[in-house]
Image (tube, rainbow, N blue to C red; front, side):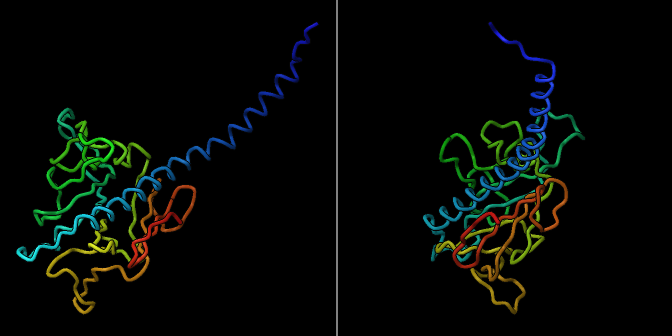
Length: 230
């Protein structure tokens, strides 16, 4: 004879499910932030790889050092040609490129190609270069809509007002404007190679520079370029 559930048993099961949901849901939210950090770490490593296998040195080009591979984060006006005027959103995205035009802004010929899909560029979109609705852009590199990233903070050995990292042919990271020479002395005020740990915070809400449920910090070590999630 089949025994039916009593009302008390049904209520108890519902309570247990509710408790489990309350415990699991915050974890799912924090995982989205960590997923973004894991992806960014992977792409920083790929940028370093490109810099090491594609040495930009050219004895016939006095500005060869400005062409090094870099990963750039920017709060973009990622409008599409389908958006009505005045409704363009500003969201965090990033691109990987080598600056052959020396203007610190990528065009399509300078952007890295997605190794998993040669029809895509490694960019979430960039100004007029690659529109939001362009299938050649990578939506996962648009950190705002894809992962809910509201803010990005560069701190530690990085310059807070320059949100990109580039690498030399040895894979050494730098964070500054490539201006007058491959490496400039400390007396000029422009430290090219990182001399201390660079920290990049990905945040839901405003960044504080402290790891929390709403902020994940990525660390890039000087000299080696070793990158990790703190």
